[in-house]
Length: 207
Image 1: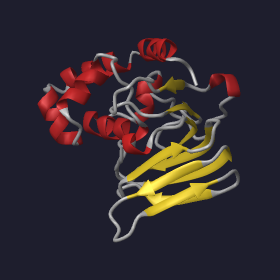
Image 2: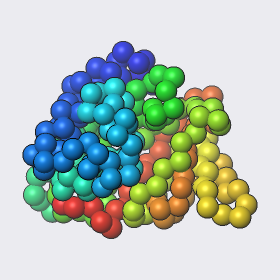
Image 3: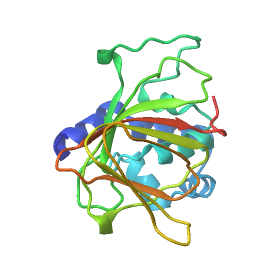
């Protein structure tokens, strides 16, 4: 994983906060309105707009839906309208979570694998998860469904909302499919980071 200075640089190069603020103002939304539409707190939205924190995929999905753009808009512009898209290894759009002590920060970085095609119902990512203490885990929810395939390392996935704890430990070759409205938290439990293919399917995602 990159260090915190490099991660902040990635955020600034991506101009994510500026893009979200510009879209929000274009829609004439206050932070309070966007917070109500997304369920994301005003302080965290403010952090994101000021490039103080990088949101996980689930949070970006909620923001993109509220601002009526495709999620890939935040990785470099509107997707190209086409039905076949080949993305070379060096053409991926890469993002890094900011590594700090704040619990608002997420513990992974991800690369888009199909940013050049619009109108799709799936968003595939190559994700690298790092270790996070159990007490610092954050549970996320969003609409749609999610698929995880482990390529390297050992990953722990936790779910809430059941009578008993649902904790799954995944190793290379293992896969997991679940409905994303179930509160879930993910972390690497191996010494090295975990590399996984993650596919997010959001039934309500605007294109």
